[in-house]
Amino acid sequence: MTTPRFGAGIWHFATYLDRYATDGYGVPRNIIEAIDLAGQVKDLSVVDLNWPYFGGDYSNEQIKTALDRNKLGVIGITPEIYTRDFVRGAFTNPDAGIRRKAHELITAACDVVRFHKADYVKLWPGQDGWDYPFQVDYSTQWQRSLDGVGQLASENPDLKFVIEYKPREPRVRMSFGSVARTILGIEKIGLPNVGILLDFGHAIMGGESAADSAQLAIDHGRLFGMDVNDNYRSWDDDLVAGSLHPLELFEFFYVLKKNNWNGVWQLDQFPFREDSVATATHAIDFLKAAAKGLDRLDFDALHEAQSRHDAIGAMKIAQKALFGALGEQ
Image (cartoon, rainbow, N blue to C red; front, side, top):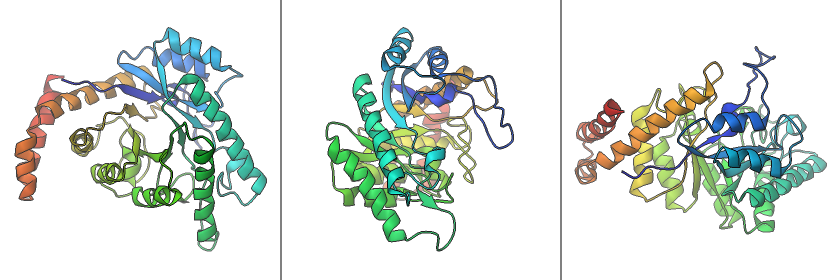
């Protein structure tokens, strides 16, 4: 069995707020404490770090010391271009000074990526979008999104930039809101170092088949990363991977394996009320069982069933592989 590498967003081990528990769920944690918690998850090998580092004024060297003692690497750096300064947008803000501030923040994050030898800069432009009809000029909005990403990618050709698309939240409509729209934008940018980070939950929340979305991104050579979690489809709940839609998640992994995609299987979960270490461990146990199920999956029989569009036959083959492996976990 080939076991994938597993990762997690460091926010999985942080403290969460919402509009009700404004004092937070659990005690406040800084990034060093979060890294030490991540280090308690046995099968975790890499983390995605927010930039700037939260909870204190930490140097790259201090973060690396914490990572090293926990035997963790860094897969990506996520610049926080979705906070209060950018409530009217980062790349698409009507204020050119704020757009420049977003560019400078991401440029600084590029140096953090280089320091940690991470795989990519992750762009999640959550405030780039609109809320009401007639609020924005769509052509201007879209072009600013493409120009913002394109300028960064052209200035930093040694780095990869991944766009994590999402249909909505915090904006009611996000500029990079679907796999198809994001691929269209990336192809228009036309640079080889821009790709997609496909979040399973964002895909199904937007009414997509995550497996189909992954295949589309792979066909265009643009699937640079992925996150896994789960939700009830109406919102980005960021629940434990496999807790609600295990068969769809298994199909997502099947598409990755069929195409020899060998990236990190990364958790993007928000355990508001659960123990973060136990939650990550439980999710990775499911992912390990899914990987074992892929090894057992009869690809030839599945391909034959698919060639006939035999839904029941194909599901029987997939269910036997996944649920058999889960039963032994």
